[in-house]
Length: 137
Image (cartoon, rainbow, N blue to C red):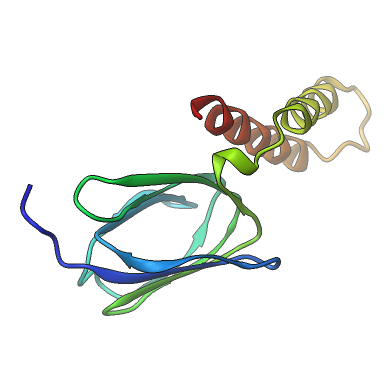
Protein backbone atom coordinates (compact mmCIF):
# COMPACT_ATOMS: atom_id res chain seq x y z
CA UNK A 1 0.00 0.00 0.00
CA UNK A 2 1.31 3.46 -0.88
CA UNK A 3 2.23 5.75 1.97
CA UNK A 4 -0.67 7.99 2.85
CA UNK A 5 -0.36 11.58 3.96
CA UNK A 6 -0.61 11.86 7.74
CA UNK A 7 -2.44 14.27 10.00
CA UNK A 8 -2.49 15.02 13.71
CA UNK A 9 -5.07 13.20 15.88
CA UNK A 10 -5.82 14.19 19.44
CA UNK A 11 -8.37 12.37 21.60
CA UNK A 12 -9.08 14.00 24.94
CA UNK A 13 -11.28 12.65 27.73
CA UNK A 14 -12.01 14.32 31.08
CA UNK A 15 -9.44 12.06 32.77
CA UNK A 16 -6.53 12.30 30.33
CA UNK A 17 -5.16 12.96 26.89
CA UNK A 18 -6.13 9.55 25.54
CA UNK A 19 -4.22 9.68 22.26
CA UNK A 20 -2.04 12.11 20.39
CA UNK A 21 -0.02 11.39 17.29
CA UNK A 22 0.36 11.35 13.53
CA UNK A 23 -2.12 9.01 11.81
CA UNK A 24 -3.11 8.03 8.28
CA UNK A 25 -6.82 7.42 8.94
CA UNK A 26 -9.44 7.51 11.67
CA UNK A 27 -12.80 5.70 11.65
CA UNK A 28 -15.62 6.25 14.13
CA UNK A 29 -19.36 6.57 14.53
CA UNK A 30 -21.15 9.91 14.56
CA UNK A 31 -24.83 10.64 15.10
CA UNK A 32 -25.09 10.84 11.30
CA UNK A 33 -23.42 7.46 10.72
CA UNK A 34 -19.93 6.00 10.34
CA UNK A 35 -17.14 8.23 9.03
CA UNK A 36 -13.61 7.64 7.82
CA UNK A 37 -11.17 10.53 7.84
CA UNK A 38 -8.00 10.92 5.79
CA UNK A 39 -5.66 13.91 5.59
CA UNK A 40 -7.14 16.98 3.87
CA UNK A 41 -10.72 16.07 4.84
CA UNK A 42 -13.17 18.95 4.59
CA UNK A 43 -13.56 20.94 7.83
CA UNK A 44 -16.35 19.50 9.97
CA UNK A 45 -17.70 19.61 13.48
CA UNK A 46 -19.92 16.72 14.49
CA UNK A 47 -21.32 14.78 17.43
CA UNK A 48 -19.65 11.46 18.21
CA UNK A 49 -21.93 8.51 18.98
CA UNK A 50 -20.92 5.44 21.00
CA UNK A 51 -18.84 3.06 18.91
CA UNK A 52 -15.40 1.74 18.12
CA UNK A 53 -12.64 4.21 17.28
CA UNK A 54 -10.21 2.74 14.75
CA UNK A 55 -6.88 4.52 14.35
CA UNK A 56 -4.65 3.63 11.39
CA UNK A 57 -1.14 4.66 12.24
CA UNK A 58 1.80 3.61 10.03
CA UNK A 59 0.94 1.48 7.00
CA UNK A 60 -1.81 -0.92 8.02
CA UNK A 61 -1.12 -0.86 11.77
CA UNK A 62 -4.43 -0.18 13.50
CA UNK A 63 -5.50 0.36 17.09
CA UNK A 64 -9.06 0.16 18.39
CA UNK A 65 -10.72 1.75 21.38
CA UNK A 66 -14.22 2.19 22.72
CA UNK A 67 -15.35 5.76 22.18
CA UNK A 68 -18.45 6.68 24.14
CA UNK A 69 -19.90 9.98 23.00
CA UNK A 70 -18.37 13.38 22.50
CA UNK A 71 -17.60 15.95 19.83
CA UNK A 72 -15.18 15.95 16.92
CA UNK A 73 -13.63 18.84 15.02
CA UNK A 74 -11.83 18.30 11.73
CA UNK A 75 -9.58 21.07 10.47
CA UNK A 76 -7.17 21.06 7.53
CA UNK A 77 -4.39 19.14 9.27
CA UNK A 78 -5.82 18.03 12.63
CA UNK A 79 -8.69 16.02 14.09
CA UNK A 80 -9.64 16.67 17.70
CA UNK A 81 -12.07 14.41 19.55
CA UNK A 82 -13.41 15.48 22.92
CA UNK A 83 -14.69 12.21 24.36
CA UNK A 84 -16.90 11.55 27.34
CA UNK A 85 -15.03 8.27 27.74
CA UNK A 86 -12.44 6.37 25.72
CA UNK A 87 -10.78 3.06 26.61
CA UNK A 88 -8.27 0.66 25.07
CA UNK A 89 -9.45 -2.97 25.09
CA UNK A 90 -7.09 -3.95 27.93
CA UNK A 91 -8.52 -1.15 30.11
CA UNK A 92 -12.09 -2.47 29.89
CA UNK A 93 -13.37 -4.32 32.95
CA UNK A 94 -15.35 -7.16 31.36
CA UNK A 95 -17.26 -7.98 34.57
CA UNK A 96 -18.34 -4.36 34.95
CA UNK A 97 -19.42 -4.22 31.29
CA UNK A 98 -21.48 -7.41 31.64
CA UNK A 99 -23.11 -6.06 34.81
CA UNK A 100 -23.95 -2.81 32.99
CA UNK A 101 -25.52 -4.79 30.14
CA UNK A 102 -27.62 -6.79 32.62
CA UNK A 103 -28.82 -3.61 34.38
CA UNK A 104 -29.69 -1.95 31.07
CA UNK A 105 -31.57 -5.00 29.82
CA UNK A 106 -33.51 -5.17 33.11
CA UNK A 107 -34.47 -1.49 32.80
CA UNK A 108 -35.58 -1.97 29.19
CA UNK A 109 -37.84 -4.90 30.20
CA UNK A 110 -39.27 -2.96 33.12
CA UNK A 111 -42.90 -1.85 33.10
CA UNK A 112 -42.03 1.05 35.39
CA UNK A 113 -43.08 4.27 33.63
CA UNK A 114 -40.34 6.19 35.47
CA UNK A 115 -37.60 4.35 33.56
CA UNK A 116 -35.93 6.54 30.94
CA UNK A 117 -35.92 4.15 27.97
CA UNK A 118 -33.57 6.30 25.84
CA UNK A 119 -31.01 6.34 28.62
CA UNK A 120 -31.37 2.58 29.15
CA UNK A 121 -30.90 1.93 25.41
CA UNK A 122 -27.76 4.11 25.40
CA UNK A 123 -26.39 2.29 28.45
CA UNK A 124 -27.02 -1.04 26.71
CA UNK A 125 -25.25 0.12 23.56
CA UNK A 126 -22.23 1.35 25.51
CA UNK A 127 -21.95 -1.91 27.45
CA UNK A 128 -22.20 -3.98 24.24
CA UNK A 129 -19.42 -1.93 22.61
CA UNK A 130 -17.17 -2.50 25.62
CA UNK A 131 -17.95 -6.24 25.72
CA UNK A 132 -17.30 -6.65 21.97
CA UNK A 133 -14.02 -4.75 22.07
CA UNK A 134 -12.73 -6.41 25.25
CA UNK A 135 -13.56 -9.80 23.75
CA UNK A 136 -11.24 -9.11 20.79
CA UNK A 137 -8.09 -8.75 22.91
